[in-house]
Length: 382
Image (tube, rainbow, N blue to C red; front, side, top):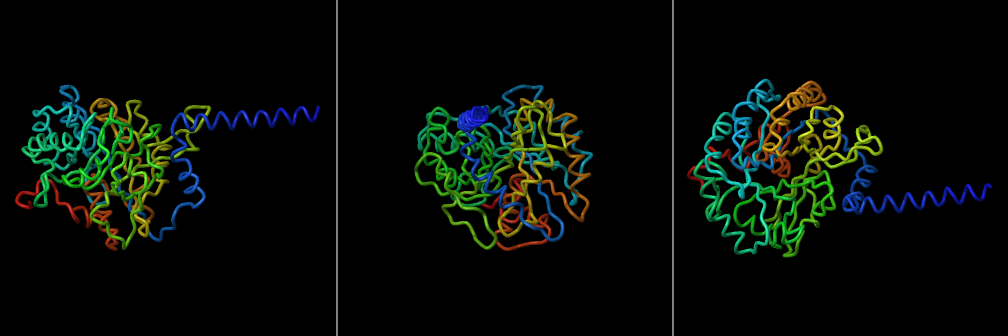
């Protein structure tokens, strides 16, 4: 009887391990689980003094001509966030990565007041397929003047088409999911040449595009092959980026063992502010904070990059859950002793990272415009 029970336990363990391995591969968790375990063992870095917490929302922004979406962002969203301020007096910042392939010019004009009144800034989002290096560049050259007509993504360097950050549609940066979702193996190189300063696509939970590394700010070099960003180096204090290095700015990706809303497994957390409007849940917010994403050597400056599809999900993003989320940030993470809260957009986060790499410290609010100026202050720079 004892031998039978032992055999049964062993068989059960084998079946469990095989099933777990199948699930990890099916959901592409096997790509990043090694780095997750490494970080779990290593633990969080020690910080002396308050943690400066930079919170940003990057939006895969796809209005696509829907008037109800436009009205929600023009009228409802500002009323929700106007009640909140960070330690510097800034409103919550929203970075609208506007979808190039769904462009409606009247939307660009209608949303100008959000930039002018300090609610956020515009960057580039793009779903594209079956492109070549030539068609990729040609399409951007054709459309960028339309954005710039309304003050978005103007260049700051001579010879550059624009100055912008990027979120790839369908997560397929650098042809990581094949030509059906991209087609350009040297996409990172082309983005840099056109004036792109950083990518904000990741994490990509349950997608083959997800890099092997998580919860970090990295630099990749385009090697001419698909998914060249899979090999990268971490951003460090005292180590300036080389001309061919491209910043990959990630948001939180973790297993939240304190959140069992799915009953049979803990929550896989990726910072998605989705239609289910759960982003006001303290269990989620606290998990984002615990990831402590920072430039190596500057652990007191930490970044939380959340993402959304805020046009489609406007009832969620321009709704009570967003107010609840910002309330929790301000009530728990802005006491001035343990935490100092800073609402930033993608450009400001990039600038603060560059300041950290250059060895600067103190209040990151001082470095919001460190390298790249505000979009309304770029005339004549290029």
